[in-house]
Length: 109
Image (cartoon, rainbow, N blue to C red):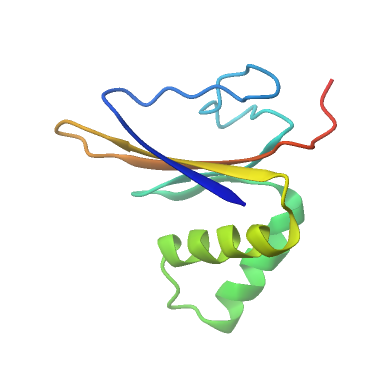
């Protein structure tokens, strides 16, 4: 998985395949693998990865969300070369960090 880092004033990101707003957590793009927020953890996680994350947590309950994100990015780097992660830091007082993964080879309508 390629990771693209960016710093912006206002976090806005659209799915590169469908054009959908990537931060709509109730209806993510079909290409979305995960949405991760630094204060909440995973807002969305594709079902095919949920079991892996659950297994990691079962093996080590002390894993922090950012460690899970790193493991997920590493897993995708090894198994799925078509995936990309946008890692975005917001400037200003909020200092939010959002990472969003997309499968660029997803079969989307």
